[in-house]
Image (cartoon, rainbow, N blue to C red; front, side, top):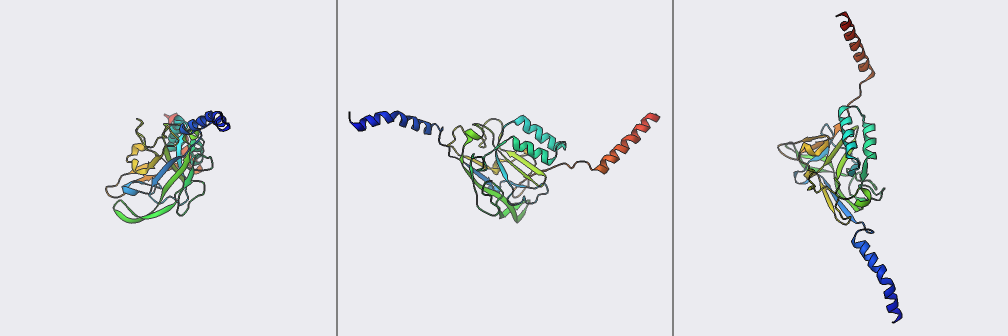
Length: 255
């Protein structure tokens, strides 16, 4: 046996092991998530509760919630006004695996336009080609791009529902494209090498807007409006409520 044959015999098991690791996705993570939120093809766009633009540079959170029970209770508390914007934002952040940023090494955002962040996926530009509620040529801030090199296994695991959510000026919107049967395209694949496309065109009813309001217009693009925080009662309002309660109590005592 020649020296070369001896070397091949020794290194072959290592080569096979390395090749097997690559093929099974254990060492190579290169999934790409394509993000489409510019209203193309009549798709809805995300706006404030008043129907105005969300500011350029506002972060678009892309990924999956770890605890759906906590997510539901967080949404309920915010909608009922028992949790303010700051508390709700903290709860959402702590419960979320975000692939739209390179800070956590789950992926690297790729966008061009005004307001682009080097490390986060954001509202990054504007378009004047959209018609909303019959009004053409309006300028809207939108988001388009991709997140490359995504490691789904490390971030959240396979077959998990994916979400968009946005927080802006004390308002929050959360959307998903999932019907509960596993047929949605917004689900992490079983192989980190596979790609995913998240397109707001998949959102076409209030049922898929977990927090916020879906506005369906007869003509043009529809809107996904963020949900505003319910203002906490002012000191004056609380005093009025207190006085009203005392008056009612006195009346009951007289009866």
